[in-house]
Image (cartoon, rainbow, N blue to C red; front, side, top):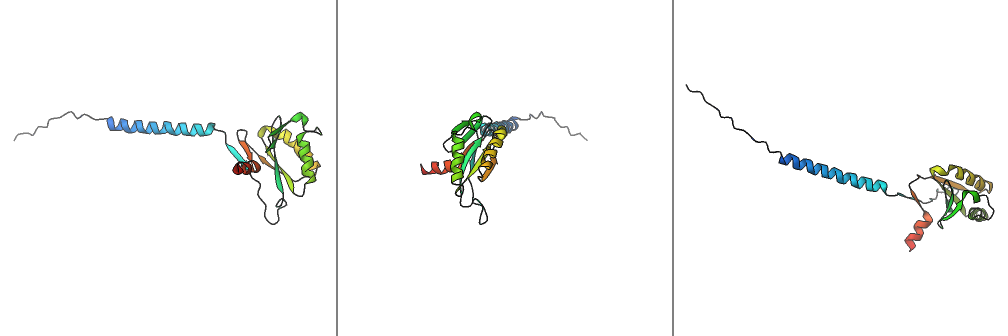
Amino acid sequence: MRRRTFSRQNTDVELFPFLSILACTIGTLILLIIVLTSQALDKQEVRIVARNEGEKGINESKNPRYIECRKDGVILHPSKIFVPQEELQSPNSPLQELIKMIKINRNTEYLIIAVRPNGIDVFNQVRTMVQGAEIDIGYEPLDAGWQLVTGEETSNETQK
């Protein structure tokens, strides 16, 4: 009996479909990296909006006033007036004027202080002044890269 012979044919493997899928995957990953890094580089915006604390809240009927403590001084919001650290104790500084105004209206106003990581020393100075004036305060820590938008600035933007 005769043996059956098999002829071995060279089979070529086509890698084009695999390379095509690999190129699409790499392109998608590059696009994802670009989108994520562009979002990370944008300054994030933080809105501080005072809420009523309900029936037993002490600030339920009071309007908030906002200031931001930084390393070199204080920013009064929404006017964005900057008061350097050296002028915080000055009797005619805008911060002292604000504290006097809130002290007069302490039944209808209180102070919210936004604190940057490098503004702790300035915050301690401001808190001492505010507590000496017997004004109600609240504070909110902020990250260094966040842009602060207060509730007053938000309402002014929506009215425009």
